Length: 126
Image 1: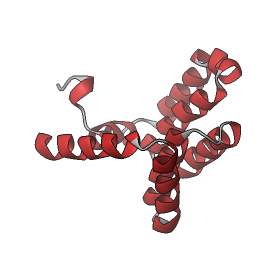
Image 2: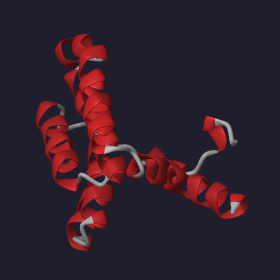
Image 3: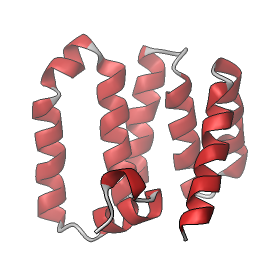
Image 4: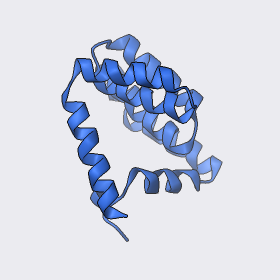
């Protein structure tokens, strides 16, 4: 079994997709309970975490709602726009995906470098 550090995003999505719906619901409930302090102290982070869990399961509507809320709470959050671009891309709305990606890069140009490194890493791990 690969370590968590070497698992690809696709492998993580496949694991999430294989979760029983009841287990997935409990995972989201647990995430909300564990991060209860986060929702009050750092709500943007909590919505980002839950959005990522929802996107991994294929719940693009839920992920989109969480990323929308994260952006509403912190419009300067580059990662919120970046993650929302992934949702738009998964839904096939490439114009919105590109707009959010461009906004993320404008807010934090380091994201472009990080994404490029991730693509290269994933290409070499196949």
